[in-house]
Amino acid sequence: MSHHLFILSPSDTPIYSLTHYSTKPAAAVTSPLAANLPTWSTSAFAGTLTALSGASSATQHTTSGPVRMGGGQDRHVIQMIANASLDVIEDLVRKENAMYLRTVDKFNEWTVSAFVTPGNVKFVLLHEAKNDDGIRAFFMEVWELYVKAQLNPFHRAQGVIRSGVFDGRVRATAKKHL
Image 1 (cartoon, rainbow, N blue to C red):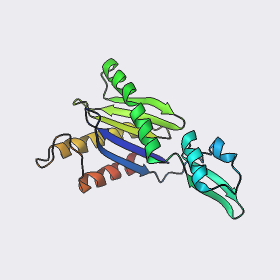
Image 2 (cartoon, helix red, strand yellow; image 1 turned 120 degrees about the vertical axis):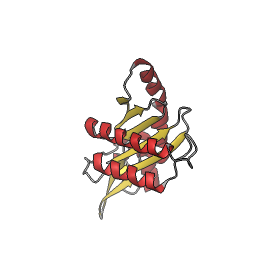
Image 3 (cartoon, rainbow, N blue to C red; image 1 turned 60 degrees about the vertical axis):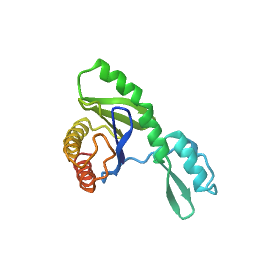
Image 4 (tube, helix red, strand yellow; image 1 turned 30 degrees about the horizontal axis):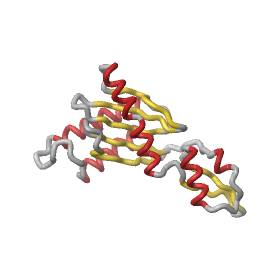
């Protein structure tokens, strides 16, 4: 199971992104398009069909056993889903006073959760499984780490975060809560 975190500035410029693969076992998702492909088809074609269908992966059966192929994990598909949810996030920010917006959008098996800081920095998380308490705790800890990174006098305000320490701590937080 994977999680994709994007931190966006108030002008929707990417500040930080993270892809986290959870160690928790996930149910296998089979793409209906890729499932109809013959076993001799190329993996690139099957991966393209899987990406278009939105499945996170496809399992293709061959004579040597099942082969798992990447699909919806393609970076451009993930970014498209996150960008498509930004309008919904901004509408919810105008209506609600809460920082944690919970589930704001869904695209196939991907659920989009959002957290907006008082400075209008958006934390967008794409995930496959429902875990509201863990996601809320994750967002709160990442927000604290973000504030600490912004307080660094050598960091440009709302600039891209390239700190290895920040990245390591966000990864540890993701492992803990997701």
